[in-house]
Length: 350
Image (cartoon, rainbow, N blue to C red):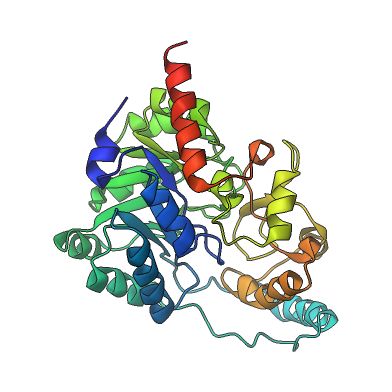
């Protein structure tokens, strides 16, 4: 087995838990994954600096092993479409149906550079990022303090660009992956490439370790990814239904009940292309035809999704999940990792 990633990250197994934002990738989940020999990740994309500091402290109380923080390297929102005010009006009416004000009451997302500074100050072992590309000097700043830096690529061109700015490793995200597309050249392009086609092409062009993401749910997927050039795998959906995950119980249940035809790509919930289980919210917002750019659409729909969680109504939650969600199981994170390694050994010798 390729040991480049385990040696780089100082972990036992080449398994990374995705940094799912929105309360899913909690300190409890991250610590459990790290304790089991993988790399647990805090999903800090929507946190502020203080929330991130507190989460880091909780992880360190639970484990002395390496862990990661995942950040969204976002830019200023794209220009709104000419009918942006019409979109806001429709969303305002929808918000009123949930007993909310017609405009968002929650503040804007924390500037990612403030979170980057927290990671540097706290000397977090690993930081991964998606949605953008920091400057090479910012990458070196973290590395100088001992932090391993991992970027996210959805195309060969993105992978080559990220290697040039000096990242230590790359998550190569295929079209099968649940949640948001992590790339930055064409974040809303819907002609994406699957992991099996993308991974070997990236492996032929870059030298740094690759972490395969998208549709990997068990040991078979891990072995296949490593044959195609990966040094490890990143799993989101598989960890989402684990006991330690912070996902809402109704959300977990929908994922556990899903099959190979359940997921769908949409921009309607947040303004950025993402894969999730189709529900009433997705259908209604898609019927409107136009949306605000990310993160504005996210900010306008976030409180609706939070209200749906309080009401235990999965039809109006964001049910991010990958194409292999039908393989999900309810188990502890450590059990998932042990099972994957056993399956991988069986596949390798058969």
